[in-house]
Length: 109
Image (cartoon, rainbow, N blue to C red):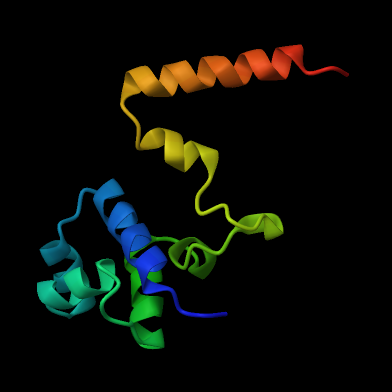
């Protein structure tokens, strides 16, 4: 597995924001500077294994979620449908949910 900070950094940022934390808040909880957090989130800096474990604890996620490892071997899927939907405005969420429900109902059995 290759470390791809450009994928992992934004994932960390989304998880942090989902918990209403600033980069400064996260840095304090992890014992690192805000700059350190920003560099990781931008993909400019690699993190240590120790920091990975602390991030998992503080963000309350497992390593696969934090490192954007797709579940069930679904290559190319960075996040679950629910996670992607949760980042959209309410109106768009309802639109896509409606389309998805129509697809399910019309799927030939």
